[in-house]
Length: 283
Image 1 (spheres, rainbow, N blue to C red):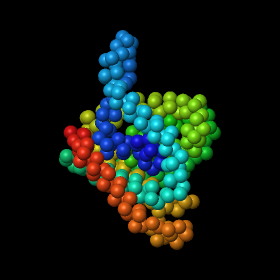
Image 2 (cartoon, rainbow, N blue to C red; image 1 turned 180 degrees about the vertical axis):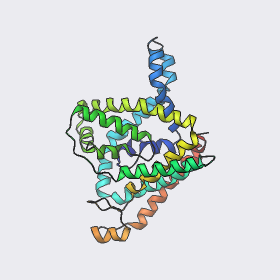
Image 3 (cartoon, rainbow, N blue to C red; image 1 turned 180 degrees about the horizontal axis):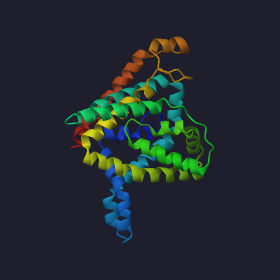
Image 4 (tube, one colour; image 1 turned 45 degrees about the vertical axis):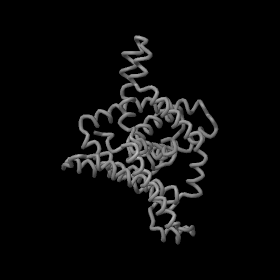
């Protein structure tokens, strides 16, 4: 999830989904505010830790943070030097995740189909927005963290891409590289605020309206696909055919390697579904 969250256009929520921890993560995060009020005030540390699945959240958080700090430079290098191949891998992963998520919907309805289209349009519209140039302040960093983490929870909507649109992706990534703990703490506080509120909302929607919510999440992932198309024009961000890309950029289209990585990403999802029994995560 940490590696995915570094890449604009790829959602950590998608990774949580295909590894089978999505609903568990939402439930644990959603339990935090209530557990903090009812159990921590009574100093019931053990029951509090169990109620929020503390071991699970701790290990997941350590995994995400260590991945971000260890892989920030590698992911940045891959984005600059091997863009086509990196996007190809994530395209395959997201395509397979779309199929997986659509299969979780036991009964399709007109409303579910409508929400699928709505989710796709919303995610696609976000990918077409133009980044802004904000005046950096701690309040802006805090608000950006809250918005980005809310997006990260949703499969298909990239928290990094939201930061990119807000003009905060570069400053936050630079803060990670420079170990600017003051900025990172403000950003983390914003993330925590957004996380606690939004996770409970999504978890409740999945419990009350599972089919419709899953259709909306599937639409989000479909609409986000253009953002990870491997062959993009650098300046405009327009998607190109592999051969137009090679002609316009002078770079090789790497189509055979790209197809292999698309397949690899899809196979990884299939393997996870079989070994982790991911297919039963929403039942």
